[in-house]
Image 1: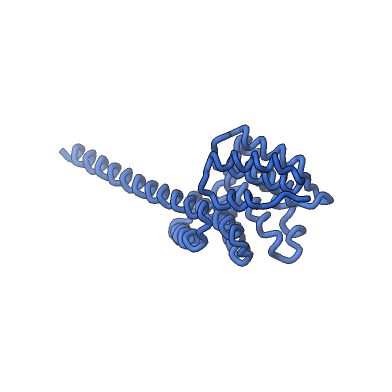
Image 2 (image 1 turned 45 degrees about the vertical axis):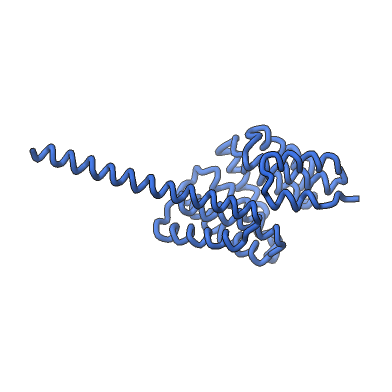
Length: 243
């Protein structure tokens, strides 16, 4: 009788534990959908609220997943801030996101996404701090390369690497041709992914900078097919090609 009681108690505990995990995962999924929608709309305030909630959760649990979520949401907040040319929010989100991504790396050194976020967010911080390129440039590149090494199919990492090639001065390793190839690789790996959508947008921006209007228009059309609601794409569409 005692054995049966213990088994029933164990089953009840496992059921409750599984239910708690399911509820937590559902809440996380809802927050991720809300964050993506806010990113698409360029809604800074909504993303700031979601980042604060995620940071509170990371403070309570200090888990890998919780810290990674903070960094991920901060990266989306940066896009929304760019949409509105709000450099103050970009700088703060980059600093906060780096801290969360570094904690995620410490909790899971083999996470490609954690390394990617450290590198990408450092790249975002570079223009907003004194001697940013010297302080963070090589570290940013190393983290993104580590992300690709850990997962050669991480499309987000290829997008981050493409942006690094695009924005880095040529004398320090920047290369628009390499950027184009890297963005195209991200698209080839997962053509319908959010990362592919972002890669199309950046390809359009590169072609605009080169005065290749038709190529830029084609890339914007591909991005809009994947997501017609993203403000970042609409803003890129309205950007004139270089003369």
